[in-house]
Amino acid sequence: MTTDHVSLGWQCSEYGARFQLQRQDDRSSTWFTVAEDYVYDTYYFTDWAVAWGQSYRYRVVVSGQNSNELSVNVPKPTATLKPTVKPTATLKPSVSISLQLNRAGITSVDLSWTCGRSGVTYEVQRKGGSSSSWTTLATISSKSYTDNSAKAGTKYTYRIVAKSATGTSNEVSVTTLQNVTPTPKNITPPPVTAKPKTWGSWSSWSTNPVSASSTRQVETKVETEYYSVTVYHYSRWKYYNTGHNQWYYSYAQYTGSNYQAGTGEWQYKTTYEPLSTNGSADGHTRYADWWWNQTTGTEQKSRQVTYYRYRDYK
Image (tube, rainbow, N blue to C red; front, side, top):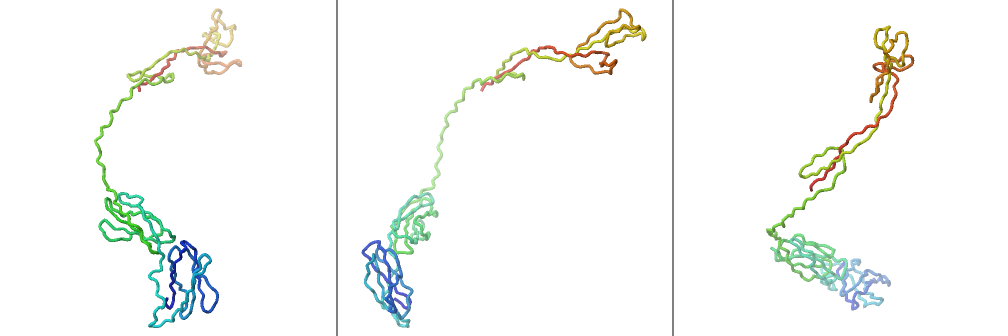
């Protein structure tokens, strides 16, 4: 106890019981709760909400049962004032920590641990390698840690120290793996067996010519194709015109006075292309070379067509 705070500590035989620390001052008969928690063994608490020169009474209530009451007087500050109540050496709760190794690699070590109390801050400490003293690697609140600063083929010892409580874990020693590059073996690959070649499937028949070779077989067939074409028929009457002393052509038989007997005859012409027109006479169309009377028809024709197909040697 000092002029500005009161430090208390107590033990409870009921492990894990929930308690209330209550306070009453000399100005009131009412008890006020100043702390609530679970107690597992020894618990410590410091009451900073006190005034110097004031008298207080404290009690601990566990599971509805009151503890003994403790009365204290907070002294006024003086140059020679000594505390009437000796403060405890530590106000941190005691915890039990169990450390285990999960995995050791070439340059990493995975650790995890258990603790019966929550909200504890831990220091992860290591020694080994080039150092024989403990070195703090990290201060964390989780319960696992991976040391990525380890060196290959080195022995290390780890421990966990509670920072916000009192307790140190067991020690775990491990040697990291060696970074060894395996020597490749002279392995002769198995002989490659060539896949036997075979003739592939025949292609479809086509009129595109294909040449045969040592790796290609070719078959041919000839078929007769029939088709129709349009034909154009023309006619004209040829006679000798004595009036003009030359041969003339008309679209009909001519027997006029200028007709030379015995010279007239019908002429006929068949083409696969139409003749060009060359004017008209007497309402009839005249075609090139004085041909008349165009009519059309169809003519059946045939031709020989060669087809090809092939297959390759694969």
